[in-house]
Length: 430
Image (cartoon, rainbow, N blue to C red):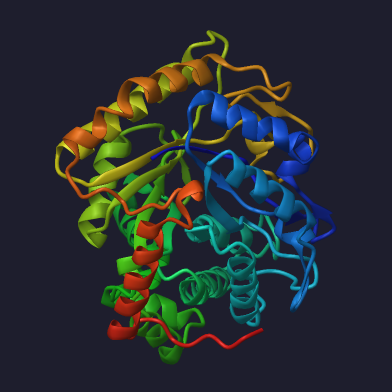
């Protein structure tokens, strides 16, 4: 699955007074039809995309579907399969932020309402980058609740992951063959001296927490104590252990040049640049979860030479092939995003209007060199890879196949399997 994405980040900053809306900043609300045409033009069949949560979800059980109805109808017409990103770094003002304990149950209702309105959609990322969202919102003090504490971090994390789990359960009641692609940042922390080893070890354990909880994997004893010491109850922990939805998932992982860190003896961190690279870190994550993998985000600025992004695309693709050839079942690759972005140089902490030249297209919708390179890469590899696959083909139903006999049979079979296993709790009507 070759993919790109349309950035729909919507965190708040300045104590919740300022909403950072990347779809607005990048002109997508005005040019969405053109953007979808560009996805098709480059030969991409899968698009990470979702409705803006703060404009769509107006209150509990109250929605404005106007933009989503038009946009998803166009994706279906063009036979582009959306990987629906329902929550990307922010919530509507009426919910507040990720410290709100009501968020998970409320979000389940939103996910259920979306799935019922768009039953042809199969692929989902209910909550994007749960670890990063909790870190930036409640540990670094950058977004949303803007807290800087371990208690705040664990609270945000448990609410984000619970929301993701409840959303998966709800979606499966509508679309039993739904596939969930967790887009999560793949991190590594390098100790820069012997005195920093302990701090780096802790961080390298904490990087797995979101996926451990999401997949119902028992954390190690030190992380269990850490969670309980910072506000998670035993009952909350067992909620995650008791919800086994791993069989419906692909482990989506993101890798940027900033994903590896140097750790100082005082526990402070700074970017180390690429040390291990995508292939080694992905082997670590795959070894832990034993799931199919999709590379769900990467990019690099075009740079002064004009070739930096193209070289990075080639390097990331070489890493994907390397880890795939080593036996890890990699099923997809993503350059993120379709167009340039705004203010990610400050991690969306400031609204400076800085254009980050990270897209396949610039903000005037002119193709960048990396866009041409990605188009060529897709053309060269899309028919070769299936013949060399290390795993079975992912059972994706494209939009134009939704009502076909095979798709109907697949959903019926999935529904029978869910009923037999009993992995999905009944979700009440809302």
